[in-house]
Length: 477
Image 1 (cartoon, rainbow, N blue to C red):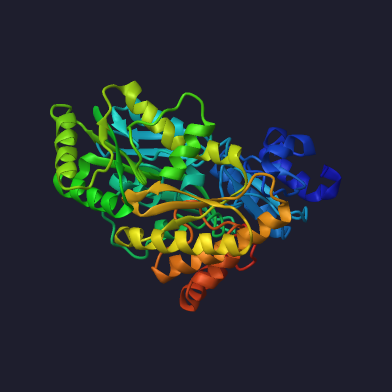
Image 2: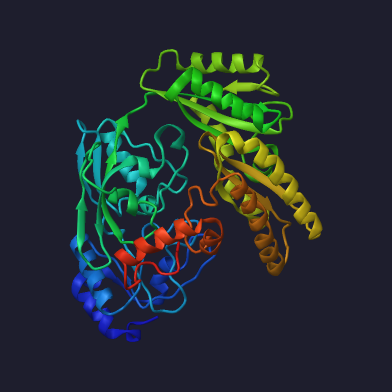
């Protein structure tokens, strides 16, 4: 869409951010108006790229006066369509990527203060240069931004030890829907002076305001890692192994990633230069990693723990501890290759769910049975591809449909399987969105699975902060 669509709005925004802060040509807007998965396509008169918090606040005031809805976008790497505009052409995108300053590093307070548009990998690098460690780690860390990570309460592979993004932030700076700036950039670990406003904006997916800055927690930098791959005959054995490792080794356990035999086979078939880490057939596999600031004895601790697990019958067809960094990297390549393999294999019905860890074995048994019954009844040959962060109860419980299945059949089966899986998740008091957010993908389902009281509370907060409903409409709520 061109500038002629809304010239007054465009000129007011140009006065705020200058020509360098506007993207008006459709070809240049394409990277912003389509999500990276290719599921959603929107249309906007303009993409606005403010350079700082003051400009962001002025942009919001213009949009409020013009009754123009705002879709905030960071690196545009989301999985749920939360940062993609609709097709009306009435919304504008406010992209934070020009706000990319490392504002301050405090190695005594162990904090890192950044603009919201800082790429996650750059925040990690800033921490390393200060001799510290920022633990959030995602597959998209080379392009996703801190603001987007906060808006979706991102998780990743370090949640077991360090927590989600909500646990990794001490303070926020937010532009409110009326254009005011809330400066909550306080690096405090104790502050009992009222409501937790910081927690309110984390995970709000741009529906309550625009995060423009953050104070992040830093940690001691691990200097040693030990990595292992194990096979098990059933998921219950892996859950018991996880509990045993936690009890024996404490916070040295930083990752416990699971994949089913079908998930591993898919990677081996579709990702080059991969091979099975252990011989024999196991129904489930786990990638385990220890980390510590003290290297002495770490690998031996992991080996001893796995010897005990083998004696206890928790490890099936063997276990192997990585002998080098390259060996460990080959394990991680298998885990990280699942998404790539799924894309190559055919259409996938994805579920990003969370359950109590103790409920995982029973849930998976029931879900496998229910999914196979549902797909068989529909005359579809489907395969469950189950993997995830078992250490924090987050499963990516996906269903691979046949390649070449008609789009209408894919849609019908997606709706059917979503209901089967999510109803069972609700039965086990889990969550239908563990780390990818609700966005527009799960918005309608959220209303089914959230209690009326919870929905009323969230809507009341939305109306109080954004009475004109201009912040990311059609997402989350």
